[in-house]
Amino acid sequence: AQKITQTQPGMFVQEKEAVTLDCTYDTSDQSYGLFWYKQPSSGEMIFLIYQGSYDEQNATEGRYSLNFQKARKSANLVISASQLGDSAMYFCAMNSGYSTLTFGKGTMLLVSP
Amino acid sequence: EPEVTQTPSHQVTQMGQEVILRCVPISNHLYFYWYRQILGQKVEFLVSFYNNEISEKSEIFDDQFSVERPDGSNFTLKIRSTKLEDSAMYFCASSEPGRGVKAFFGQGTRLTVV
Image (cartoon, rainbow over all chains, first blue to last red; front, top):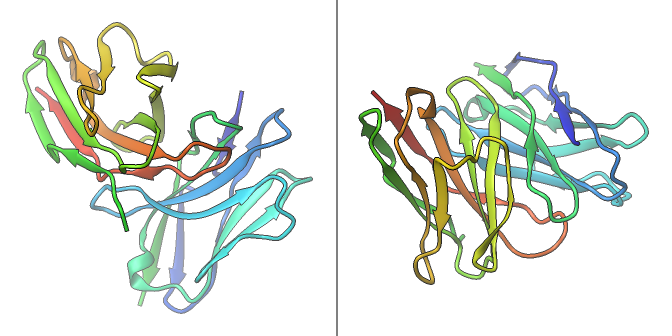
């Protein structure tokens, strides 16, 4: 069974600052994928970034980067230069092979001017 | 960018009624999914569908639920005899075949059972 833990129910950051959203995972599979999704107040789920368990380099997508520490089983999302539009719920998720996604409980990020 | 489309965006139904939630996955995707998110809670997997049959389902996906791909483009979730606790946001998603591929989500259907 897979498990995702997001320990931060809410995070505050000032505009233009960087913020790290924590995610730890548990799986017995050797091959797996880690994902981050953004859910704004409108409700849709927006894919942000993906990291494969065998990827040697940390994934980056624009202002988003994934700090992948395999030995610690952590996959933290780093958002650089926060913008007001980054205010949303952020979900960490994982899958193994062809299996479906297991989500964490999410972290609500609020960006203040 | 291609997207997953869900209709309706909001559905209100009376307890005991049947509802059908509709989804149009991305055209070249072969895996289809339904997820559910009760208000304020995490997203939960319901069912996955591949090659015209269910490939995986969760404990939530009981006999009350069914999925269908009635034609080459639509993917539907039917909930028979809805209950109050079925009120949630329902997300359809699709993905290409392969390991670790990202799932593209639709904008969701908010189901309210009264």
